[in-house]
Length: 138
Image (spheres, rainbow, N blue to C red):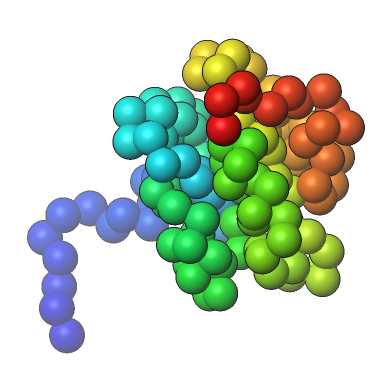
């Protein structure tokens, strides 16, 4: 058995965890965006706030990953969100995974976190109902 020389990692906050979080729980957010720069910005904002992030550059890859991974929320461009609503599996409780349609104004921390918070507390697939507009051009 291998022994590590560094400190025990499980005692340190990581993977979306804060000191005040319930042990073992970090919301997992899947980011589906074809544009690499946009995906990296969204991922950086979420990771800096200690969310666990699973980035994907296509709907096809996201659907494949979703066969074994159940994120708490999916953030995607409007076109990708429409396709994922058709092809994404259900969450652990049998309901659809909440999907947030990414808008240009969500490139700021506050707007993105508010959209994720609404998705986590409102339940599945409520992006449009919560006033989350789809980005033009998708």
